[in-house]
Length: 255
Image 1 (cartoon, rainbow, N blue to C red):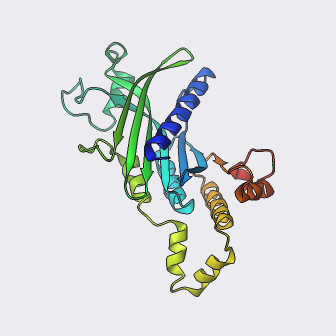
Image 2: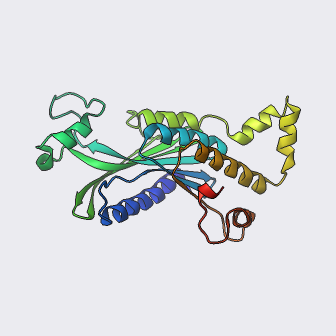
Image 3: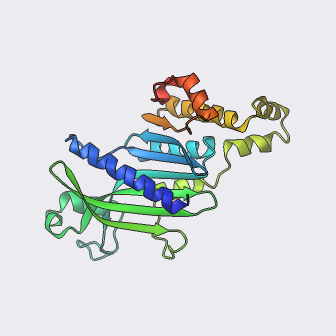
């Protein structure tokens, strides 16, 4: 599964999440911030965070390292426009100006200069990325999807994919994983070498680092819930069942 397939998969899941949430007629129709982590083709952990940018990117930074993620994606509410300049100033959009036009400019309801959107940015080790944006409008308890935009690192010559969250998570995926850190430290630190040798089976070792990472995220108050994935019949599924029960609901607060 390549980066585009992973991004498309998560985009569809997040669109369905948005539709279901709006259908419940909540007071606030915004969904939470979601983080997804893959090792190879396996989606190993999904995190739900508060609508708090700083907490979400901290969770992404810790998760990228602790889960040994090859790919990480973050999904959040945002705004987008099909025009390159603000209709109010005639100049390039400034930070937060799209939100202002959407929320405070009455003409936007007719002109649709700015729409709300669900944005997913997916990041791979090595620097590849995709930014996917799905515009929407809400009518009653229904979500009406409008334009989809996608920027891929291989053809994003103008650097359209940018922003605080994007840049921070690109940097997070450039940092070493916890396994790489332990391996490097074990060359000079006997204690690190001993810790690295305590669990020789890779699948069991990854399980324990995943659990430690989830505990750290929970203790720091960076996440609301987590879903841990496992292949049916795998050692990982067995370990999760032993640790968290066999009801199929693995909640990070139980770790």
